Image 1 (cartoon, rainbow, N blue to C red):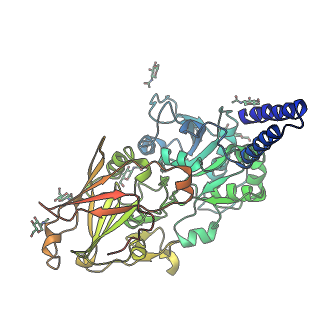
Image 2: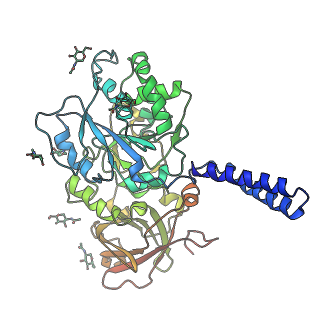
Image 3: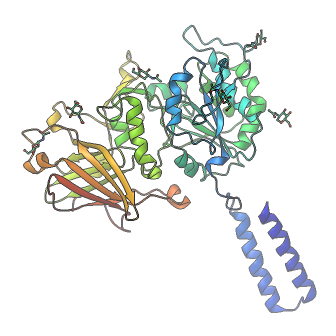
Length: 465
Ligand SMILES: *[C@@H]1O[C@H](CO)[C@@H](O)[C@H](O)[C@H]1NC(C)=O
Ligand SMILES: *[C@@H]1O[C@H](CO)[C@@H](O)[C@H](O)[C@H]1NC(C)=O
Ligand SMILES: *[C@@H]1O[C@H](CO)[C@@H](O)[C@H](O)[C@H]1NC(C)=O
Ligand SMILES: *[C@@H]1O[C@H](CO)[C@@H](O)[C@H](O)[C@H]1NC(C)=O
Ligand SMILES: *[C@@H]1O[C@H](CO)[C@@H](O)[C@H](O)[C@H]1NC(C)=O
Ligand SMILES: *[C@@H]1O[C@H](CO)[C@@H](O)[C@H](O)[C@H]1NC(C)=O
């Protein structure tokens, strides 16, 4: 490492100064200053001495099967950057004809895991052993200059730029296991609140991955009675004494139906992944799942870090609360709704399973949906996006129908235009997140409202003035 060379150079310099003139007060002073600077450099136990983490430092190990991959590859294509991203889609058997499609990751053959026992039960998946061993299979491929191994399913959508930003907070030379639990309370309770759910994706630092690759077989043998690969990986990491670092930008999406609530109230942290993308309803109305995701990526490709970030502002005159979930949707509550209540997740989704009264319990705060559609917030979905040197403009179109109870100004409102600048968070902003503020341009003309997003002022509070 470069900085160590610098240290030894300055050390010899100090020695030289001392030897040549031990009574030179100025020299002693200079050397003390030098030593103080060196001490501070040692204290910065971060990756500042290395080039910044980029997507080239990541290696992806995706789990799939040869029969489902042809259908799923269009989802991976949404985010895969050929020539920049490295990794493999692991399958149990390779197809006869080679696929030349370079816009998706190559297929790799999983190692043979038939010697391992699997005793979870009749409904489980023997492939759990194969999936667990992807960690070893990919480490054994000797990719160069890897900082992070990222694991996910073939129906996981990643947001690579945000992944890089988030992982750059951590030093890959230390042991890290970074992910998120399920949104579903019972699933988290059953598997563990400290387990990364692999559909949402998780990252393992290269230093931990190397150790894990060497010991994982013994864990696959010992944990033959567990359901899936996530639990085996978690058990192995736990036996090593390492723990999960929670990053809420990973989304397992253990739910069905309308995920609007989850997406519209994203935490103040970059969106890292979405899972089960073909199990849930399309995230935009009137589109297929894949078209809807492509639509979201139109915004994500322009400002990846701002995608889904929720900014709330108030119009005193109209007494409206406007919540912008950037690049996705806007909600208007035609009354004053305090910020903490706006941030609760509207329970638009259906449970993944039914049969237990706890099936609808989630690991976040929810608010119920009004029975009467006319009492619900008015929703505007992303329609188009443009960007130029003056910033980014996103347009949103009304999706909720007119209700007689709505005031005329609300009935007339058809479109919302949002102005923002590209978000580029530095490491301090990632470690100490702060929601942005917005302003509503007072006049609503021709059914159009305009909103500007900006950083909040130092002591600014988000409420109806
Ligand atoms: C996604 O779901 C649709 C409708 O259920 C289905 O036709 C399509 O094959 C699915 N795609 C994948 C990749 O599973
Ligand atoms: C794949 O590419 C090679 C070389 O470019 C070519 O010879 C081969 O026909 C291609 N195969 C398919 C299935 O397109
Ligand atoms: C996997 O290994 C077993 C023996 O451990 C062998 O019987 C089987 O044929 C192997 N499968 C493949 C696909 O190579
Ligand atoms: C990876 O490196 C190890 C140790 O040098 C070597 O034994 C192994 O064959 C290499 N694997 C590949 C796929 O190159
Ligand atoms: C969805 O499509 C239908 C029929 O094409 C159309 O009437 C409706 O306005 C569309 N809804 C939205 C929100 O675009
Ligand atoms: C809603 O009402 C306004 C004003 O009454 C009207 O201009 C607008 O076209 C209506 N929108 C729909 C979708 O019916």
